[in-house]
Image (cartoon, rainbow, N blue to C red; front, side, top):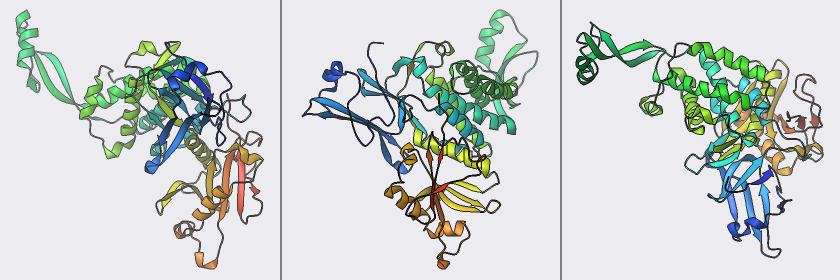
Amino acid sequence: MSYSIIEIHEQFGYNNPKCLEIDISEYYPILNKKTFKKEFTQKWGRKSPCYQINYNEFKENYIFEASYFVGVDWIVENKLPIYIKPKLNDNESQVNYIRMLFDAVEKLDNFNYLDHLYEIRFDKPAIEIDQAKDLLSPLLVIQYLQILKKIVQKGLKKSYYPVISDLNAKVKGKILINTTIKKNHVKNKILNNYCKYEEFGINSVENKILKKALQFCQIAMKNINGVEVQKLQELFNYIQPAFYNVKDEVEIDQLKTIKPNPLYKEYEQALKLAKLILKRYGFTISTINSTTIKTPPFWIDMSKLFELYVFAKLKEIFPLRGEVKYHFATNYQELDFIINSKDKNYQMVVDAKYKPRYNNDNVSKEDIRQVSGYARMKSVYEELEKDHEKNEVIDCLIIYSNQDSGRKDFVNDNFKFESEKNYVKFFKIGIELPIV
């Protein structure tokens, strides 16, 4: 590695920029008294800052501010990278984002919810990091295995695919004259013909790509910390037999000819992930177990991951179809959740906030206004089958991360939340996140 990496944790200096605890004076010539900022593009094109670095002319130093994103990227391309890792407020524990992702994806019924969870820049130079700092590979592998599980449950897609075969004393499809002459007639194999024809089955280009990426996952699983090895192995063992009769000799360029089939919606997502996994390792399986790896710049949205994790926990206590709606879209806005459980008598607008400070502080006025505004929309009243003309007030709830809550889910304490002071029918509840 010909360069050093600036390493900080997420939320470092958030809303209160500060200097790093380490001496970075050696990087001053590279930073050159400039301001640096990286933004993450979220849904609807909205941009959020991953980090910002400003030069303080008065003190002649640099102050840093990191948001709710983790990842690796260049501050100055090919000269100085930055690595932002998950954290919790105690500065000692690290959020087990792998466990959060595993639990979240396991409960998803729509993998489109994973859109805008991360971004990867294959168009930028790769960054060399220690294997232990690799946040991207586990995320891709777990997401990929869960999507393959859905595909296997439905059955692998069958389709027509081209086959080239050297047939003896028979002809099938189209004879490849030039190949037959070069490989058979020249060698005095007069009765053999190379033929191109189509067969129907599971040995298609799509399934070959999926199997190739699955082989990479089998090795990459050994480097994933945060999820029990047995759980990953059980997931892999469930998937692998379905691909037993699928070949793995395939060129990635063949994917360009594939058209998505609306009847197999998981295939399009799985193929995208397969390509990312293969590109991530440079199509070379021997690079997976290296102590240092080269990774493309990437960012993971931890607030989005927290949303998905909360969704999984809500589904545990409200398992019936339609009881929890995620990202209810109305009036050019998206609500995190709407709970409409007649079985348990809950009707409320819910927002997930990745803000541990709400354990000791009141919910901010901005967040109260946001969620209350959602709960006053006519379309929300219609969704909950309430009459807005009767002046009914819809309950509002904010779910936030709280390591002191002792609450790992909402089932054991039956979803007990507390009232927010000075507000009517506005509540909050904390949930403990898994840690490494």
